[in-house]
Image (cartoon, rainbow, N blue to C red; front, side, top):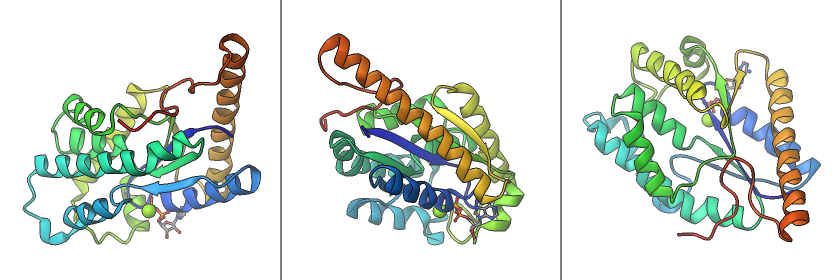
Length: 232
Ligand SMILES: Nc1ncnc2c1ncn2[C@@H]1O[C@H](COP(=O)(O)OP(=O)(O)O)[C@@H](O)[C@H]1O
Ligand SMILES: [Mg+2]
């Protein structure tokens, strides 16, 4: 099937877990099982970082501390989970990645997109996803669905509106990476749309690999980014 790095983004309650489970099930039946992962906390080290980040007792955390902890979690995640999986030719689905930091720390917390992007690029050795599926949902609807118990979820209405606006701005800024899906729709409809998006990316990856075989004698990366690379 070839390496492909997919990320599902959106606010808490947008339906990320629901759709990732469905997508993983379909990929497993149709081709081979993907590597399903998440941020923060996919690694043992990341799990400890996650506890600090999401603990309501961390209320006094400085936004810069928050940004650095997410970047630290991501560095470990990329090195230990994502890069090895891509190098082995797997499809990787991550529940949140760089764009969560751009939306929450860069825009909603006001630390600035460029600085947060630089930090994440340094942390991951420039590993960006091939496709980001943004589950777009009004903050009130997302809040109604989610349990809202961790430190970030407990932020007020204004913060969550800034996150929603930030995701929109990111999708407009990076149209090659982002596909926006209406997450207020029923789960089956969203699942079908995501499946079509992923099928198209897998097809595009195959075409690029075939072309490279014909013209260059060997397979290489995908059109928009990650591809297999040795851990740096
Ligand atoms: N499209 C949908 N319509 C209505 N409810 C949904 C939909 N998708 C998920 N849910 C429900 O909303 C809640 C949050 O979904 P979840 O997948 O856990 O979101 P996230 O992982 O983005 O926080 C769950 O109870 C889930 O069953
Ligand atoms: Mg979830």
